[in-house]
Length: 315
Image (cartoon, rainbow, N blue to C red; front, side, top):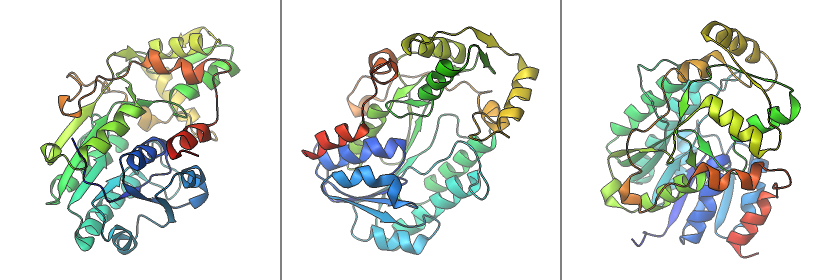
């Protein structure tokens, strides 16, 4: 399907998914405006042609509207996994989404693509899922030509999920694992980016929510053991019951880096599993985790992400 080429504004484009989406938008012929609060976080995207990185606060709807003037679409990728200080779920998920909606309307941009998450629900078991659900509700009521994506946990180079387990496996003699039976269906970041690019001008995706999952379901225990093997750092895994899982989460959320929180644990009360096929409208089969994870987790596999950006930009 031929895409309508033009300017695409990507809010939160300096993050993990944005780093993979923006080069694909460029390859598809779009000019891209990346909105980020800290321009230095997106220095790598400056290697790409037709990309402007703009330092702006997504809490400022008027600033977003100015940046969106003349755009064919706005993509909202803004999201956090844990709250830190003033960076709350309500602000990052609900307030920024409402500002994105207001900016689209003020700038005359009909097309809005929203990053959400599997199990997003205003009545969900965690603050994270409730805020994602509230954001979805606002998008659905916006009157815009919207599409919402609901991925399971996303994996790929520089992810904060599998890379964390690899780092811990290389550091710790034993892995103490809370909520070991939580189930995930990880989806490759390249597949998620493909869906966003495809959907921009595909009217069949307007007003639709799309769960996005990979081909295989794993328990958290299975994922941790797999990462240990691939990283050449297999470790015994000590599985924790519900009470010890909560105690571990409480302790970790008060340590620097916040590796785990009680809200994360509450989110895992619902399996992050699609229970359906990958959406046929996007024309791809989902990528297996085992086909990609070794390329960045195995010893000696790490390489600079700049190489990938240079390849996309032709530099």
